[in-house]
Length: 134
View 1 (spheres, rainbow, N blue to C red):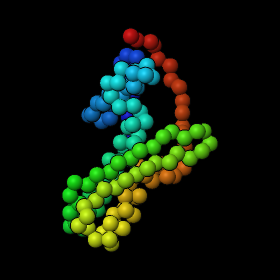
View 2: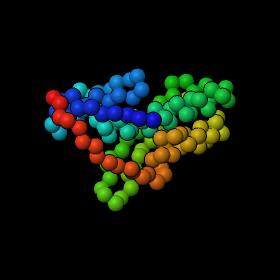
View 3: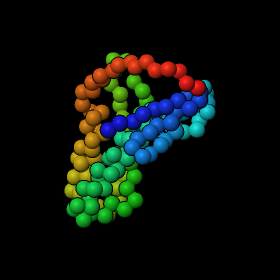
View 4: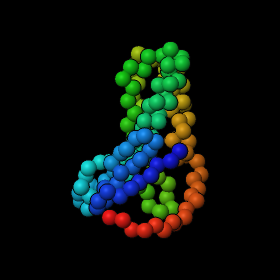
């Protein structure tokens, strides 16, 4: 999986993922122009959408109706050396049984983004030099 960020202007970047393009920017008070979500907002969106899709796929296989499932993710960046805490709220229809809700809660924590954030993360970083273009 690959994502490429290319600077447009200021803090605004075009993110290319497969055949999709997103705009990422910072808020105006941080020097951006607020033309897209911030990188940290995309991280929260990745977790929220992954939990939602994982729960929906499982419920579909079981034949359970999750209606207008909603996942809300909120978090604040942690200080260096302290863990980041994600507040994940899974909103399910009240018609589901306690057993179904318990199972979906367990499945939600198994989504790929949740597992990635929960596990040890390693970085292989390098710098490549290219000619400046405007």
